[in-house]
Amino acid sequence: MTAPEADLILTTGPAANGGSCVARHDGRVVFVRYALPDEVVRVRVVSERGSYWHADVVEVIEPSPDRIDPLCTIAGRDGAGCCDLAFVQPAAARRIKGDVVANQLERLGGHGWSGVAEEVGDGGATGWRTRVRLDVSEAGRAGFHRYHSAELAEDLHCAQLPDGMLDGLDGSGWPPGAQLHVALDDAGRRHVVQAGPRGGGRKASTQVVEGDYEAVQEIGGRQWRIPVTAFWQAHRDAPRVYSARVREAAELRPGMTAWDLYGGAGVFAAVLADGVGQTGRVLTVDTSRAAARSARTALADLPQVSVVTDSVRRALSAEQARPDVVVLDPPRAGAGREIIEQLAAAEASRIIHIGCEAASFARDVGEYLRHGYTVEQLRVFDSFPLTHHVECVAVLSR
Image 1 (tube, rainbow, N blue to C red):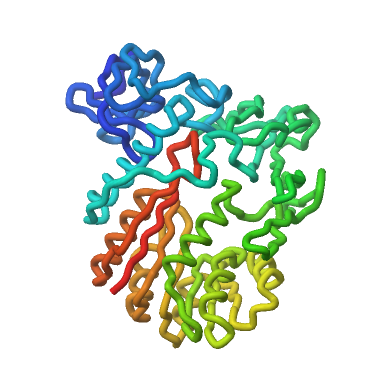
Image 2: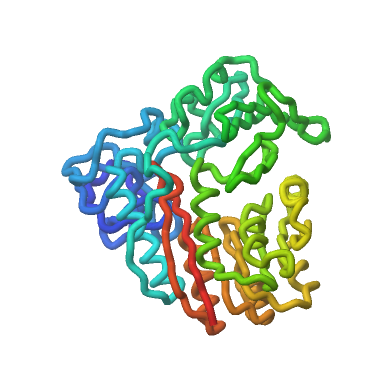
């Protein structure tokens, strides 16, 4: 059956991973964006992927009671791809996110769980983001990408951003193809770095437009200097919340050994170092040289911390020590079978696994279960309000 040219009227079912709801048309699965469960909607099919279609809502005929006026004025079918759940009452969005994670865990990980996504910090659905990247069009104007498109939406008033964060950046005159990296540090100071564009076989150059190349971030009285172009948690409260969770769940004692894998700038390594004391050892591993430099500077007073710039797979292959606790925060694709096999072979007895994509996280949990681990606790955080994204934290032991 080819995709229809005319619009369809569908009744939506449960939310799916990725921000859509599941519906059916003549037995075919249709993933509907900008819908809520149990709505009657008019949709337009926008793509065909094998046995299923993707569609966008063009009219809401019978709305869910959880539908509200969008909290982000630039998002939606004809706008930017930034806030795909801006039309959902925030408490309902947290409930839906919990349902999605539960479904992924059951289907892909073989693990039963139920719950809702927890608020992060003050729980505000807007104004929580402190880092953002803009792309520049051929006309020299900065903007956000539309959903799965190279086109840019040039209205920069995304509701995730604090008021004024992008003031003055919406005019023309930027180099076509460049990127603008914008960060607010913990003092509220703005830093803007222009990267690129690439061309002529040369690497992309960087230029500080405002502020500094590095933003100062602080957690628990310790400071990190993070390049504006490098990774840092987007939610202003996420580093503090995750650090507290790691500290609580690690249950470390002086003299223990802890691994911090995919450790970035070493935020969790600092927490682990406090737990193991000067008689213990912390190994933090990441492939990013910029992150390693930030970690070595921030943790220079902690001799028990070793910072390794390498892939996690190679670093673990070279390790001989047995870890008492492992913390890992892999990229969206997850840790995967090989890394989890290495952790099991190293006889890691306690693991704190953080995942930012529900399906990858669920598959990783399933791998741990196959290696004899038990899920002690699992929590889901609404670290990306107005979007379908979540952060999941599992504490596992064997």
